[in-house]
Image (cartoon, rainbow, N blue to C red; front, top):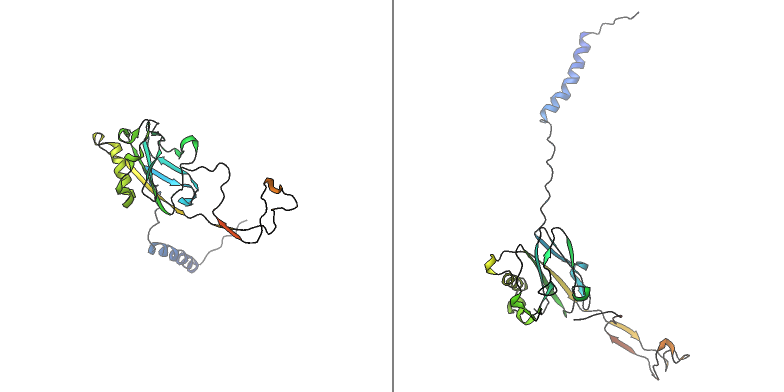
Length: 241
């Protein structure tokens, strides 16, 4: 058998008050917080250009340059070194294909598949401008015998204001008859002097005196102890403009 027990009304009243207090607190804090809206991802820029090594080079380094466009288009990439001299990094030749695909990352190669350029600026900053347009760029004014005419690319403005000078060249390449519209990105790189090395001159009359052909070279007599200074030695395959 089940026995029924009567609960005093005072007990019910206490329990009811205990439940009411949290409800009042929730009400005083306001309604439920709405979930945060989905964060919007910023659209990709029309064109980007960047370097390996964050654009921080020593004299003689081979620089890699990358470019990417948000939409299909035509691309031209110009470089002004610290002395204001202009070179075209892309396309390699005026008649080469300048079309790029949306979202594809391109490494801009030099002639023969080499890196885009050698950091041959003595010191200072260089500037690279990448411009992309729907209509093809026209290079008639800047080519000679199928190659770039660097005399035509030189502009005094580039030396004083590299970005403005390179923009002006891109504007001329786009042409007024097409409206001259293009999007561009600019990146700068820094070139510092190459480190200098210190080496000891061998104290003996011959380098490896116990074997006159030591190291594969004949040095002949050399006396004395001293220091010699010089720039770094570049291994085989190092190329220069």
